[in-house]
Image 1: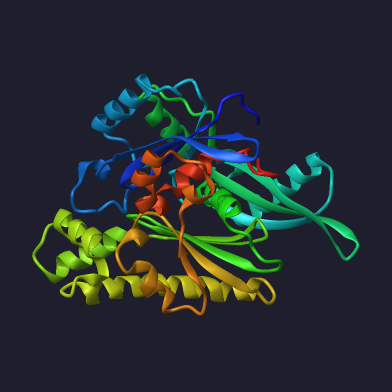
Image 2: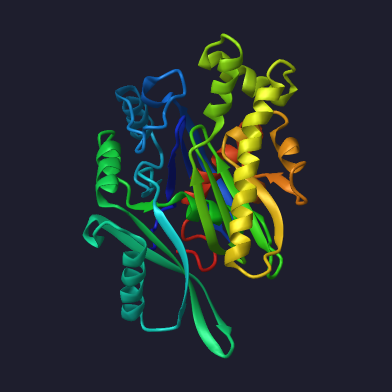
Length: 354
């Protein structure tokens, strides 16, 4: 789908909304706009948001969001938003080349095998990420995505209360994959692990040569670190957040409990890698890419890297873009937090990108 104007990437997270606009000129990417609206989910201050699926925006957030768009130079640009409902079904499939109508039927058949709910309750889509020849035959490498229709309606209605009507919606792993494609050059037959660690959950993704092959979501994130700190000492959630963001693993009093929560994250990555090895022959992991807000904590990347015989890098989606000095000064220190929004805004701008 082509648009005359650059897309607005709207990433609705557990603790903030990120907005970005990217234009492309002569194969260069320009960051035209970036803005963040921080908030506490449901107005709560204890980080207890496990039961929230669609991150309904509070009236205060809707007013703030509406205010941004009312005075927005890009307000006529189409919006692409991330899907925030229940964990979507995302599966890698490999099919022989066939006509599009047969691919669509095969996708429905595969989706029905993987789900217990009726297909009528789902929105089912797919993307052909790669086409190549194997053993003399052309094969298609696809990603199947299935999400609840009711979740999409709820999210769009919620955003619509701010007078914003997105033209496109994307799932987080595919949005993040665009940032990986922009900033990283995978070696042939090597696998990249890219993780999004937010306030309430972490997502582990593995791709090979631009094809998403594995994705897994775990309800464990930065808020769990803060709650563990609260359990150790009588401090509020906000106090724990401030200590975590300011000192992180450098804080002697909380270093041990932070490491315990991080060890749980490391274990989930190791489990995912082990499972991936059982599904694909001889994987060659090239590196781990950290995205989201939690990895910005002091010492996070270094401690994470000690558990893997791989380079661990903190993503900065702005590193391959032309940005004003003011934008760079403000955004570079928290680059990994912007991966979702930038990935959404990049839709359709990369080779072979839908």
